[in-house]
Length: 93
Length: 117
Image (cartoon, rainbow over all chains, first blue to last red; front, side):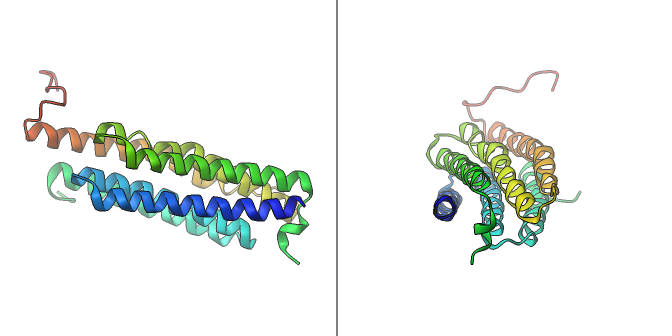
């Protein structure tokens, strides 16, 4: 009984996260200025990381956690580089 | 036979609550990102997903794997520590860049530059 509820709730959570990712993509496409697009990219990769964790719970594999860690690392580097670019016009001075 | 059936009922309910709360917080953060009006308001919304959203999802993941494997598994905490350290840095850099760009354009909506800055 409780396992059916767990399955249903994990699928519901995945749908919610997909909706959240689509909202971020909408903001990234619509975003009036460049900083809005960078912020939407930041939110998008965090949502993708949470989605990977739910997939990991569903498929009983710890590998997805490591994939989430890598997404976090690369997303941080990407957002910092883009913010630096918005500030100075170049990434490495 | 599903691997989730091996979870005892209390753990299944705990994992379900954590997963649902985490997804809800991430969802609310993204709705805020879509609906709020200007950049300085929007920058607050996704942090709901990066703090509480990941926190609850990591709690669910730790509970699930620890109970399934029969030993404590904690290295999901690495993600939490890493995000807690990096999110303020990225958002501060981004907001400073946005403020700089708005001032360069001569926008009236942002505070003027102080003499000491």
